Amino acid sequence: MDGIFYRHLQELLEEGQCFAQEPMGRHTTFRAGGPADYYVRPARRQIQPVLSLCRQYGVPWMVIGNGSNILVGDKGVRGLVMEIGKMADKVSVDGTRVTAEAGALLSTVAHLAAGHGLTGMEFAAGIPGSIGGAAVMNAGAYGGEMKHILDRVAVLTEEGEEKYLGLEELDLGYRHSCIPENHYIVLQAELQLAKGNKDAIYQKMEELKGRRVQKQPLEYPSAGSTFKRPEGYFAGKLIQDAGLLGYQVGGAQVSEKHCGFVINKEQASAAEIRQLIADVQDRVEEKSGVRLEPEVKFIGEF
Image (cartoon, rainbow, N blue to C red; front, side, top):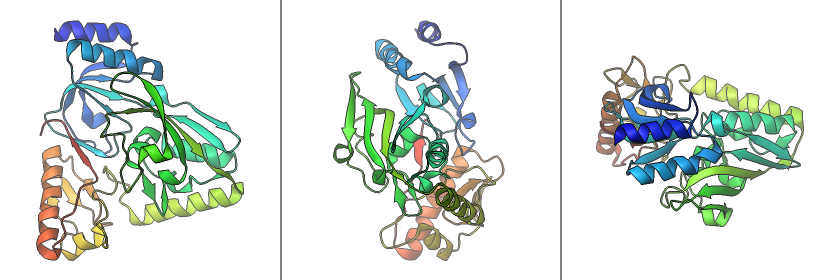
């Protein structure tokens, strides 16, 4: 059955779009994780046919974007992983409105907007994620959030229906939208920006880039901020106050540059990264009474 499914998958897609036993460390910013049974990179028009094939053969599936907010287990992922990325990353600008397919990188869209003298996306220029992933989790940084610029999002439902969700329907909150709970797949997002001074926009982006380089451990693989911000606190300070600066489990480490980041310092396994995250949660709770909630999603078999 598995061989038949994979053959049909290959017939549906083109060379370079379909892989078996694909190491997930190649597709996540943590650079860790075992193989996915099947890994595909469909164009937008191919997403629905791939899902139909999965339903036909009873193959479980999941969607990732740029792999910037997930940790995949060392035993990998059973079923199919669909990357909505370079094959679905078209972007267009019409006046102050930007339409971007889900696979477009935030950095790409932000720089394109800046080139058209559009302001509002400066905060997103350094976030290592895709438009689809950013809509799913209402990504934000430096006081900006996707909910400030999103107008509507095109999604694919479990039944294969395409529909648009407006801002209210998306129910955007801190690192939250209605998309995961409804098992929707983001196809594209429409952003409403504003006219601005091109030089000022680029200057703001450079300023934020400088702050990132100075404060964040960008030289190591990570998933960005590892923990959600607890109400009334800063995760990084709680971790530092718990004496965990530089704390290490195998090749995984609490960054010495910013305690809010768990980094893959020395070819860490997913198990080591996950254990370190759990240790941090326990130590911080013991010290401060606050239980940190990971922003990173754990995927597959550990």
